Image 1 (cartoon, chains in turn cyan, purple):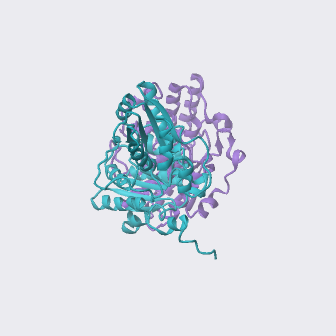
Image 2 (cartoon, helix red, strand yellow; image 1 turned 45 degrees about the vertical axis):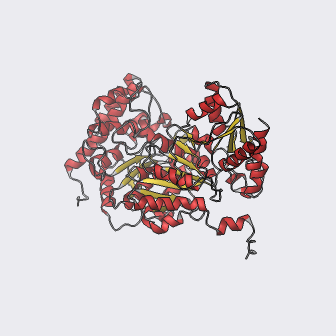
Image 3 (tube, rainbow over the protein chains, first blue to last red; image 1 turned 90 degrees about the vertical axis):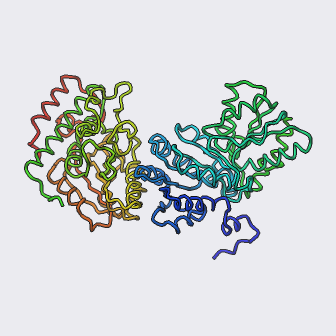
Length: 324
Length: 286
């Protein structure tokens, strides 16, 4: 038998505490089912990691355990949706957005089935599990698929809101979420709409456009830079597709610099989406993309990686300050 | 409950419909100028048996929620399915006349967004059994009794996802799911056994927890009686796999003997030769 894991360790916390923004998934699905929505759920041997065990215990007849068969899960979710259900299927983002990419394209998006794909533990949030478990390409692959909405919530409160809206949303959705220990950014009362960016001001000096985990650090960086006398804006682009193009254009017209920040490769993700709009709508701002610089992540606990890749508050502040 | 034995009239109907599928396939491919003749000819009796006998469907009502579902892993045989769907008044027969032309809903593979009566799109080999698995989970969750019949190619047995789906169906006891393997022995690059052998196929499915039957896929009587029995068996707790032994290009001698016919085009005079061969063969099959 292996030695007990230290209670101080990241691994202990990951395995033995409830991940607050992941329990949102199960809790919100239970709420939707109770309200009469025809939701169903499934996972690929990760019901404890994504918290769907809660839904499974409450609604065992609406839950399918697929075992380790992600491609089958995605194609089956599409079949399930044809019978009138709205299936939510969840697994690690690396396996959902990359391994099952073709099934998502053919069976979910092209066939226009109202499936909600939940890619959790995305980006580099699985830390020292390494590259096989990191997903720094999933925005890119999912964004290139027509008729698929791509959402990267900043925290649990925002995720819950957008999940509620997803119950009746007409198109299939790919949700990209973290490991559930993401710091809170918003009050539960805050309102969000799919496709509408949350604009925390446009700055004259710089506007940061961020999504997902990076929003927390970007918000703190904005506040720190403002305290030093700079004019800093922030756009939380939780819906990467369809992109809120108006928000990008307005920022590009007023700010000197647009800085995109994402826990994703700088190729193909939020930075690329913003670059496409700015290239076709020349304004005042120049653009800097920040994220994972087209490389595979080092091994480390996730918080150490965020610091290393300058995706935490101090790192984003440093990157932004150099551009002002 | 339906009697499992077929009457003379039922046999004649099914043979006529299988012939209709082959003749329409010749006609439609002559419009497209290239197509999968022989892939259809191997499963013409399977199409006929399902759509004109075994499946619960309503003419003119492709979206009837309680209908039995049909899925095809070998989506490239859709040219044989479209004439049936039109014949069942799921869409206007005139659509067939523009098969594959610019903007036609009818292409080489079946598309549920474009063609009423297609229960799920296909074309990417290996997905269909998973789609059927999902439909059966959905049916169970909502207390519905309909069945899903999933026709798979034998080359498709090389796709890993098929076996993920097979495990799931058995593990969750999806007894209303029926897989039919069109075991015609050929795939694009040659004989299945030469490209990458899949035998012993019956033992594989059995080992995956399925009830397995083997039948002559061109014998409409044996095939249909088996499918009737399988559908009527409410005691079965497992999904069911039927291995239909077929002949690629069945009905046209030079296609049966020449394996290169997975995809091809017949000149008008050869189309006419094939047509005559199909017409004279009807009723002579066992």
